[in-house]
Amino acid sequence: MFHTKKKTMLPYFLVAPVIILLLLFSYLPFPYTLYLAANETKPITGELQFVGWKNFKRLFRNGDFWESLGNTGYYVIVTTVVVIVLGIIVALILNSKIKGTGVYMSILFIPWIVSDVVAGFCWKWLFNPDFGLLNAIFEPLGIRASNLLTKPQYAMLCLILVTVWKQLAYSAILLLAGLQNVSNDLLEASKLDGCNGWQSFWRITFPIFSPILLVTVLLDMINFISQSGLALVLTGGGPLRSTKTLALYLYDEAFDNFKLTNASAISMSLAVLNILVVCIYFYANKKSREKVE
Image (cartoon, rainbow, N blue to C red; front, side, top):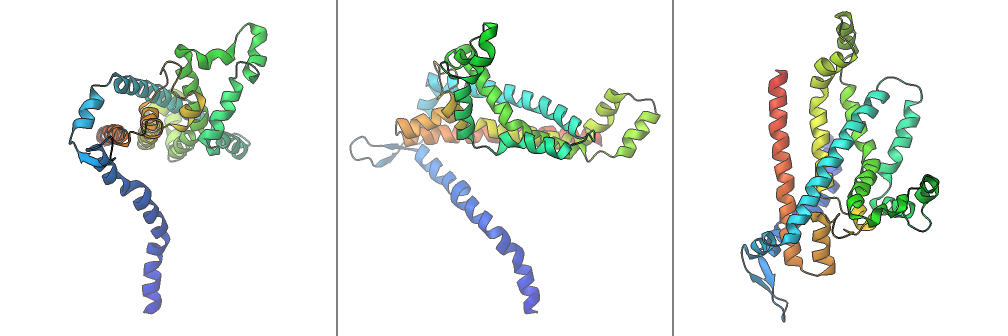
């Protein structure tokens, strides 16, 4: 009896560290952030004074907030589309039973396991206008590739490029898992019925792995909305605020301007943005299931 009780408690002991970490770093900070967003710091004493929605009203009247929101939307949408399209292509290639799949997957995963700070510094070195490697490659063609980070019209595209390079492996592996759920018998039957490769993919493969596709899109969008490490190291939000996303705007308000109450209001705005993305996911997932049924 004692052994049975001990065995029953084992799963709870195994998941306890994760639950504790989530409570300390995810769930408990949320109500405190909401509390800070509803308060204002007094200039002299530093005490918190309840102001209700004042911080949010001030935030919504700030042009920098809307500019950062626009940059965030552009960055998230373009990066997600590129990552998903390339991820599907890579997943299809890996799912075609080519030789050396394990080696290719290992190479593909290298950028993803590198930290954002290290990846940002590496690419910043590549784009360096004085001794960047890209200059050595493209200068014979008359292209100054390393000046791209200093031009507002190209800086965001460079940030998207680096993000795609880093995130592609994660998305491709998730999509590959979805493709592997498709039965080979169904694909063989479709060939016997005269379906070509595109018809088999659109009518059989896509409906089966679409739930995994939606989950991948959701995880990518949440990750990109909160992305700050790459942009902070690579561009710092510049030039001319062209890469200043909401996450970087939050960082500047909290750690450069020391306005924690304003930063908390921005943080709650990011939380609302993530919640909206999740709601859209649930709606799309429901419609997808209804279509399959």
